[in-house]
Image (cartoon, rainbow, N blue to C red; front, side):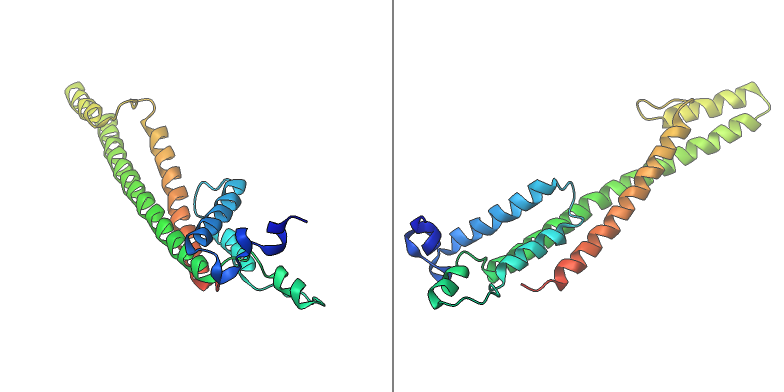
Length: 187
């Protein structure tokens, strides 16, 4: 058995003697390994990752005959203080994701509102009796189109925006739920 396996951290250091920055790097490395393995694209369900880290921060509940073996079984565990700091960082990062997503939701709402105006002008155009009125509404619709939008596809674009809005609003709800879960975790 290698010396580092028996004595924990290099040079035989244990728990409180391990440099604080090394403990932080260890937790960051474990967190990154877990998150990368699951390939998160958002902070939804990140509380499961934190639960794994909490489990590693708890003392081992093993019955060991020799005191020496008992002390070895507790080596290399995660410092709960650092884990709590990680929780705060994850909560702050999740709040940032919520903020960015909320800005996108506002953008989507503005686009849906703009497309709703186009729809109203389309109805007025279809109900117009004179060609000059029809041309007026058609020109106004053209002014409201964004690049890539046209008379044939703007209804589909509106549906896509509405779908994206629904998805993003659900995501925000899930992210707030994650924050509540993380706040309830005990390290």
